[in-house]
Image 1 (cartoon, rainbow over the protein chains, first blue to last red):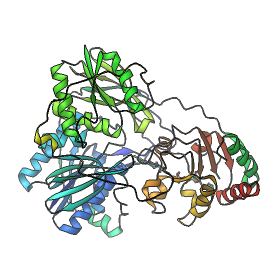
Image 2 (image 1 turned 135 degrees about the vertical axis):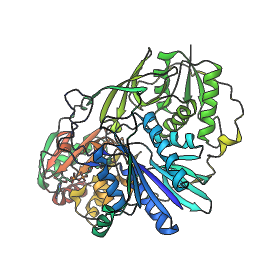
Image 3 (image 1 turned 30 degrees about the horizontal axis):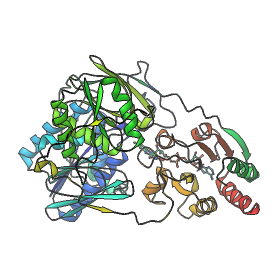
Image 4 (image 1 turned 180 degrees about the horizontal axis):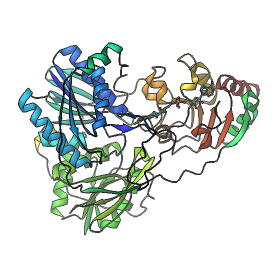
Length: 254
Length: 285
Ligand SMILES: Cc1cc2nc3c(=O)[nH]c(=O)nc-3n(C[C@H](O)[C@H](O)[C@H](O)COP(=O)(O)OP(=O)(O)OC[C@H]3O[C@@H](n4cnc5c(N)ncnc54)[C@H](O)[C@@H]3O)c2cc1C
């Protein structure tokens, strides 16, 4: 079988988000980068599916030149090859991102055959538009199930579980399908040293799409005002226990 | 002008309705219009209604289902979608303020669209208190829009306190040190009738299941008291705590972000402090 997983490079913001001077981006000077935990689970699921069923797994991203790191990380975990749609670092809106991915998927499927499953994160970690995977599914006229915590292959169908209030809803759709997944789908493995070595020589295709004029146009970002919590110290060490218990009593939970 | 609102019985829907009123006279489509839930069919109904009534905009709550159906509507209509707005002003273009990073960052944006599609982030807009809007008449949908539909439901297996609804949560981070280290967290939670929570560092290490994770990619919680033990307070963890009434942070580092963004703090080793709190509760019984 063939499985594709789409990922997005994002900064690992720490305790506080700092913006660039023009307030149009996060100041990432001192930050590391990753992909969303949702997407990490997508990568893991793709690798497991191919381990179990044979075939090929592919990772696709639209992102700056440095996004090669995230593609290599995915290949270190077992993904077979990568496709990089290179940007100049400017942000792409969800609609334009989906359009570029659709074009790349169509081109790859024409040369290498169709994907049985395409995984996306339910929403990107940063802009969180909740729509790229769904847009791709519509364009390819494939069923899409969103927000999944469990995926099981059943012959030529896939059984999907979506967490809802009071349990999980189950969907069964035919392949080929597009699935958007959430953290908790599985517990992703850590990369091994041989895995990292192998990743260096795995194939990576690249192209440079043109950024359309966004219809959801970013004007500026702002860090929301804090909730005005100002920590009152209840003391240090175990000597603080009585003060903690009094606080719990005052809060009415004890 | 008519604005179409996708609604269920939740407060989040009434908040979406309040924002939708800026765009016209609301008419609603029920989230239950297609049973069992079939998101493509709902998108088809919304698209049809929007065309029939020449709707100025379509709005839904920024819940999982709201965002999902609206994304399908956007894909179907070939229009942009602004998810999780906290405010919007009609105009050409429409201006919106929306959440990124689970609410840790706000984006001001222009939405260039003949028919703005928006979802409203829950608990950011005051709920509409007016009478419910009239419901749009629902026409039958095509078979192709029923391929993706709920065919079964499985109930949760665990009988414990649900994280999302818990009144008290005792939560542990990397500072707890190990899977076994959670014994003292569980003990305190037991005494308080609390749910156990954790940070992502803990789930990634395999110490706790992901169902315990609080934060942007975990559960968003709203307890009376949240006790964070050995959690640093990364923005992605804090994104899950916006609904918490009181936060107590226990951390050996007094400068940890969570120690500064809590209501109460205790400095020191959680391995001493947490058992001491449990002992103090027992003593007073
Ligand atoms: C896109 C994205 C989504 C994410 N989603 C989530 C999410 O949903 N939830 C989440 O939690 N994280 C999430 N993260 C991860 C997040 O960025 C942090 O890495 C994580 O929250 C850190 O967990 P921690 O606070 O337990 O660990 P650390 O940051 O390592 O902090 C451990 C803390 O324990 C303290 N400590 C150590 N020993 C002791 C002791 N003996 N006594 C007292 N204190 C002690 C230390 O001082 C430190 O403050 C996400 C990250 C990304 C990039």
